[in-house]
Length: 82
Image 1 (cartoon, rainbow, N blue to C red):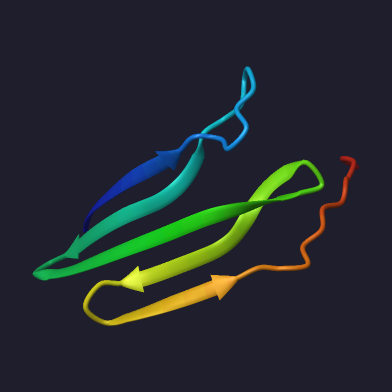
Image 2 (cartoon, helix red, strand yellow):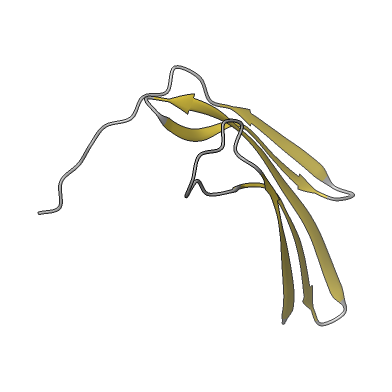
């Protein structure tokens, strides 16, 4: 098996010092024997309670099918370690 993952990034919409880039997509190529699978995962974000969480997620198995998801009415909660 041989696999390659190429991440693509988008800058923050409201950048501040120390802010991290967000993954906008991943291109994945997996080869097992003579079979090759190409996948693209795409993301965009929404701000929820000061955090950027995925809003739209698209999973494309190139040449076969595509799954599109949308997340809405999201919320965040704080959890403390045990």
